[in-house]
Length: 253
Ligand SMILES: NC(=O)c1ccc[n+]([C@@H]2O[C@H](COP(=O)([O-])OP(=O)(O)OC[C@H]3O[C@@H](n4cnc5c(N)ncnc54)[C@H](O)[C@@H]3O)[C@@H](O)[C@H]2O)c1
Image (cartoon, rainbow, N blue to C red; front, side, top):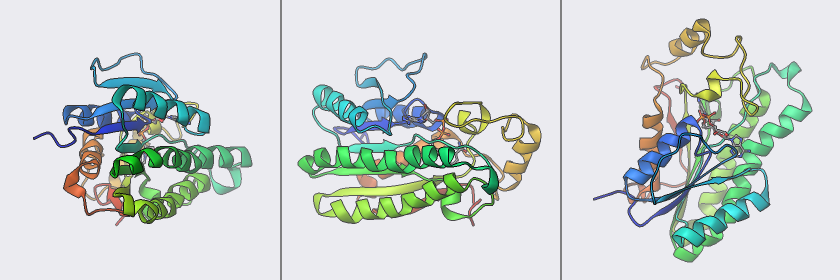
């Protein structure tokens, strides 16, 4: 029995490393999916149950259009995965206001707008699962990157508020907190999450340093994250809401 048969998902951030794995997992388990992202990938999955759509998560209008496409093609929305993100890795003194605003806008306000736009549709169907993406810094403080840390701890409040606000409509909301996952986010020099040699895990020193912080001794794979997201999206987790769940090989202990 497929786990999310008859469900329709928007995976916001669906072109990212974790996003692609989540899209694939939800499709494999029977869902219809809108993969929405700033970036539409060149290499795409060919599947009648999948639509790629351009989304800027910081813009209400962009969310409205994404929801419209989902309803037009698949008639409802019952799963929302918010796995987009932005970071500018700086010490406190170096993090400027522009970066602060951008990171908060993408990581926190973007999730708020997404939930506000999708929740009315979930209410109609009297069912919904929202999975937000935090980070290790949601659970464990660090010296660097005050904006990223504030945005990812802010998601605790947003997740709990969502869970309580919509529980009467059978809408659940949970926050997963990945640890170290080898994706473009911590590897490449992206506009939304720039890395140079001093931060990228292409630098063997950074790779080893991150690895040494993981009690289970390995980076998490994108499929690990997709498996947890599937669980939280499906009825297997029907009594789980407002939870903050680390998936980090023990790094946040
Ligand atoms: N990679 C890690 O080690 C790690 C660890 C902890 C938490 N996270 C979090 O996990 C999530 C997924 O990260 P990932 O590793 O897959 O990163 P990734 O860089 O592979 O993907 C991130 C995606 O977000 C998209 N995006 C950025 N800004 C956007 C916007 N305004 N609107 C729409 N899409 C936007 C990008 O285009 C990209 O496709 C993020 O929230 C990140 O903060 C990552």
